[in-house]
Length: 245
Figure (spheres, rainbow, N blue to C red):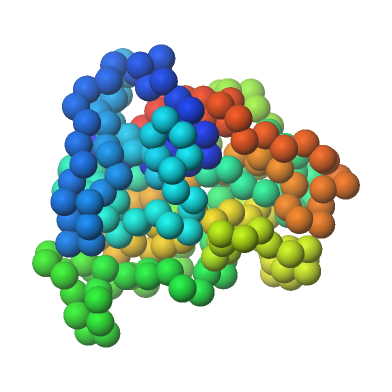
């Protein structure tokens, strides 16, 4: 199995050579523009491709401006048979705390302007004809199980289930919006997983994600005022996704 890991919050702070043997670096031309850089990593028996969604050496693009179509198309071209990612999220559900891990098993898409298909027009499909995407379950249970095993071994607090709500960004959500999402069953909020999960499904690529709580969502700050977007988030994300690959 060839796993592609998409790095999220703080991936741009990482020295990849501290975690794995670093191989070739590739930027692929796709029908949707150039992809983000992909770097080959070898750690023990694990051999993966890694890509930092938000840039290298610093934050270069926020979630709302990631070219997901180019990145997913490139991942398939590199031979991906499974996709893992990590994401910094705000906590909505009671009981979650900053630093906690959540492996979501459902998603709530509240984006409005993002392109969620490889097709340019209704009825069209680009070369290689991506598959239709019926989406009852956006996350693959086999990959989720591997992430859960890696998270459990870390000893960090873990929620094994939860719904991830994705908002449009780049602005933060209002307290009223967070209250609505909580009423709808969302556990955590972020801006990154959509349309990534739908594009992965369209290409037939199994997908699972690790959420790391970096802060409480708007209107929940009084429960825990801490905010952590630092390098430790990236270190945790890469270590655990590598372990699950």
